[in-house]
Length: 128
Image 1 (cartoon, rainbow, N blue to C red):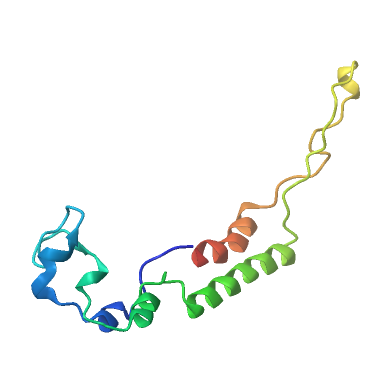
Image 2 (spheres, rainbow, N blue to C red):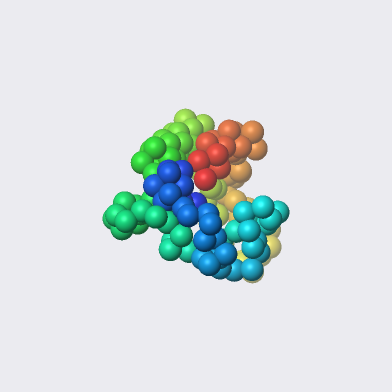
């Protein structure tokens, strides 16, 4: 998963806003006052520690959000097990010469109730 830069990027970067036009890339915003967002390069930062700056530009899923995502996915899998939810196994049945002798393709198994499926998959959807 890739996301936004970390929330502490602005504090660590200490951007020099007087040089914003020099470091603007793209074509959406031209100044801080414009309606469109201004996309700038990392050259606008006054931070001299490159390691600290690179850490700030890392993708946003940090330890807290990764732990939450893992917990919610596990909860969804646990609910699937608790509700005994599984994708029904569809047997492959070769067509027989006698049409009345063919079995049901589902083999008597059906899909789980929709409310159970929704309750089990909701934590996984929320995590993403």
